[in-house]
Image (cartoon, rainbow, N blue to C red):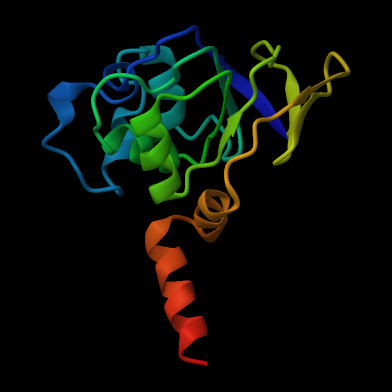
Length: 164
């Protein structure tokens, strides 16, 4: 179960998630400091570890639109936040799968900051309102990559299984 810590509208760009002026920083260990950097209060809470891992960001349509910068995913992944959005931009979605970011596509989600959500692969239950929302399922192969922690851990796992 996670608490909604940020609610966003539609068309949240990768530049909002990870501002382009920090593109020189590419290491996944360093990108988290710039997560939603221009949303200063939220960024400060993240940097001060006031937001626990597993907390939820709820967004409307087309979350992660804009550039293909992988850092927009690694900055969120560095805080182990969960994204629940009505829809996710195509390139951001693929980057999220590759890096193992916990993303949920939930077209009818209704939640506000402070609400407690129980998130599973097939549904989101808003424990605060008592409403249940059905998720769009990712193809099994893509979900397996997320479940493994990303494309590299997934590939390692397959290679180890092949050598047994």
